[in-house]
Length: 199
Image 1 (cartoon, helix red, strand yellow):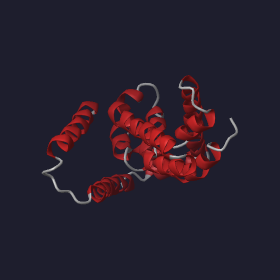
Image 2: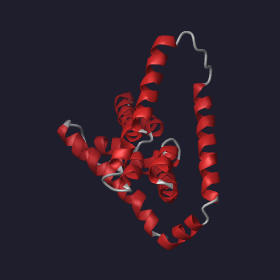
Image 3: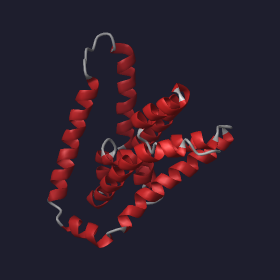
């Protein structure tokens, strides 16, 4: 699966470089969004056939909320440690990590708050996080069943959800969906707070 994804990503990049002038997709974002929605629709359809999953969610209850909390804290701490090695202000490095893989939101927010340089760093760092998830998700599964969901961060509710469903199965798809949703709601709130920390 990882090889197929890697081949698809590399093929897309090469096609974009070689045939950009000849391919006229006027609204590529719209096409990607529609295809993504179709994938998520079929995941939802598949989930509806597994009624026992709903009972499993009820059994786990509030424990499901711990997962996005740990992912968010881990992202911030990990980025802060990376920032120390890169000699960045800890608050700025932590804010990049607080994006939790949501590159468009973190890039735009930090560009507005701190300027385009930090916004670009946030954009690239979170794009690389999502790309890492796409390429190596099956390998993270060997560490823990929750590790792939942690790597995906906020994208676990949308772009990486089909891959999580394929690699981890439907039980973990529901966990990923809930975790990604909570992180997506938290990122726009927590990121502006973290970047203003006085250190």
